[in-house]
Image (cartoon, rainbow, N blue to C red; front, side, top):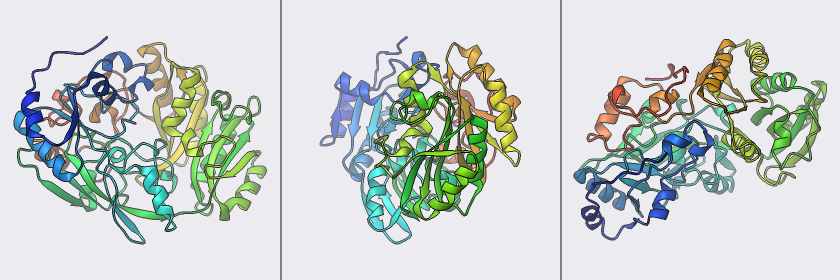
Length: 469
C-alpha cells in the first residue's frame, strides 16, 4: 500500500523565499529523509509505506531556521522537524507531505561548566558524551541510538535510556534545565522555557515548535565495566536485576534481562551464551565491581565476560544491545518479531514479572529492562512474538495487563495514542501558541483530539496519566 498523492504546495515560491539555504527535491533523497524505523513494527509498515515529503530543507544556522519557518507559515506548507530519523515507530514520517526540516547542522556545544552544558538541539548525543568525558563528566542518560540520535530529537520523541536506571527519564523534572523553542509563525519567536515548563515540548514529535537550544545537567563519568551475566532461567535473572536496580550502593547504569534464545539470536553474543541460559546485560562502575561480582555468584549467576565500555568481545558498546537496539538485533534473525511496551512497578514487581512470564510463555521469549519514571522504579517488559495479526497482538496485550502491567502502544504514531505523555491544558495552549496554523507534523498532536490521525490506534492499551502539570 502506498500513500503518494499529488501535492499542491507552492514549492517554487518557497524555494525563492529560502534562497541560499540548502535544500533538495530529489525524490530518492527526499524518500530517505521521509522514512524512519517504522518497519520495526509489522503493524505500521503498510500504513506508513509511501508517505513522503516534497522537499528537504537543511538550515545551516538559527537564522536560516527562522527564514524557513517564516516562509512555510506564510505559504501554509506543513513541516516535520527531523534529525537522524532514529525513532522506531513512524513518528517522523510526514502524513501530509510538505517539508522535512533537517536540523542536524544546528549542532555543537555553546557553553559548559562543571555541572551543566548548553548545546544546540541538533547535537548528536554520543559525540557530545565523548566530548564531556574529557572533563570527567557525561550525560545522565543516552538512548541505544546515541551514535545517531540528537539531544533535541531524543527529547521530542524518546523517553530515556541507558542511565535512566539512576537518573530517570526526560519527563522527570530536572533532567532538562532549560530549552529554547522557535515557533512556526510568519514572524517566528524564540521562546525560552525553564523549570517544569520545559516539559511542554517533551515527546510531542516536533509538533510544538522547533527546539534550538537545550541546557542539560551533567553526571560524573565513571569507569564503566560492561558485563554479560548468565542465569539458569528468566525469573531468577529478572529477580536479581530488580534487586540490582533497587540497590543505590552499587553504581550501575544498565540492567537488561533477555530470556533464551535471545542470547543466541544476537549474533555478537551467540558464542558466549550457554545453551538455555537467560542473560543480564549490565554496566557497573569499576569501584562497585568486586561487590557486584560476589553478589552475582551468591545469587546463582555466572559472569560470562567483563570489559571496559566499548571494548568487549561483542565489539560494540553494550548499550547498543538494549532497548530499541535489542529489537533491531532480534529482527535481524526474525524479521517478523514484535513487542509491546509493558511497564511494571510496585513493591510486588517480582511477582508481577513472574506472572507475566507464565501468561506470555506461549508467545515467545521475554525481556525486561529497568529504569525510573517519576522517581519510581519501572520494568519495561514484553515477550518477543512473531507477528501474526492484530488479534494476536491484542492477546499479548491482554496477557500483560492480566499481570497488572500497564501497556503502551508503540505501534501507532500520535502523541495521545502512544500514551507516554501526560497532556494538560498547558500543553494544548503551548501547541496553539507555537503552531497556530497547525502545520507542524500535522496529525500527530492536534489541539482537538478528534483531528489526530488514526494510524493503527486499535489496541486496548493504557495512557500515561501521571506527571507534572
